[in-house]
Length: 176
Image 1 (tube, rainbow, N blue to C red):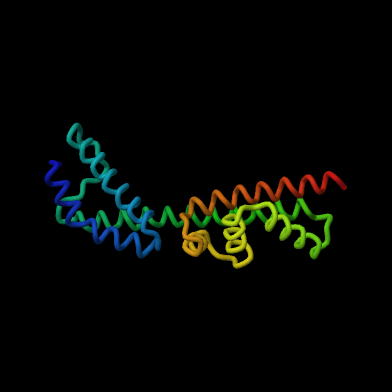
Image 2: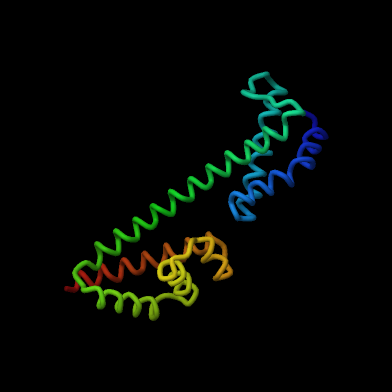
């Protein structure tokens, strides 16, 4: 595949591919990443074909749109599956760690101590993110939009906050 052919395919199909990814993922950056990954893979495979005829599947020009759209759909499904598993794992981890650390306190005392710790020890952005995620039960994406930060920032603040909360309650339990 020549550079001109590749550029033509890119210009012709990028917008459709991006719209499909955006429709499935609801995230601008992830959608761009998915489409870029598809084109990078296409370019790598096409360059390999130039060296040898070992490519698993070579779509013809007439089949290119279907091939690219299917690749985007499949990649988006992989991303969604990974996100779903990651969020479920994080939720289970939070539930188990919080239950194990502060089981000896009654519910009112536990909640009061948690709120005091959050208000006194966590930075304002971490407080906001923690409340939105766990008290308002928002998704990472919703928290990111509400706080005006990226999903990575949300994840980092939650990880640090949970670690600090866990350490605090471990210390409280050890003192008893």
